[in-house]
Image (cartoon, rainbow, N blue to C red; front, top):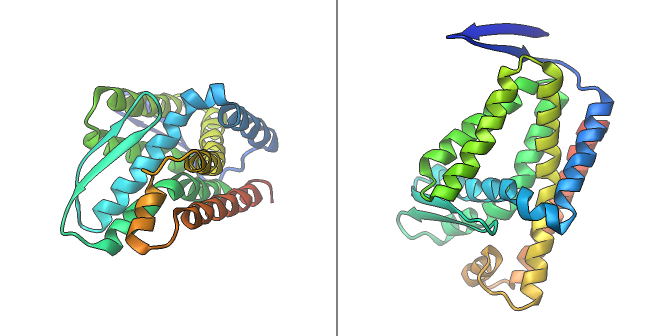
Length: 235
């Protein structure tokens, strides 16, 4: 069902319980694959994964009652989230775990919404999340990336086209589902080369369980989300 709405000159079609054509699902999946797999495209598109990663840290910190002091997103696709609160090892563990699982978890949630036909709702929730992240982003580059992504979502919502909304919602969902395993694979490669400053290493310090176990856990979670999300899209 499509409901047109207009407020202060902004016109938008609300796509609710609208099925997405298979050709859009397939083409956007291929586009997301092309954005995630090649290294040269990942250097640019990986910023979307960083947004989700740092957003995951910030969201869990907020839900646990900690102050989110700021989020920084850098041009090399790295990021940093700073929080303040009473020292609690379990809370710190949950915040650390939220990073590499965020993209896949968000992608799976979006796939479930799209499976139910809630296209516009998916984009509006993405816009709300971007707006919240923008408020706590502290560096200029990070603000530019978050604002730029949000602007694309706003323009598509304003386009009054269900097809365009479907395409963007599907692309972002596929991207998140695929970015999860890709980022974990990069983490594994960095760990093998001797990098010891990742979320998995911090989790290992808290728990005494080797970082490679946590990396494997991230990998299993992200792959399962990808399989389930694909089933929701194509099943």
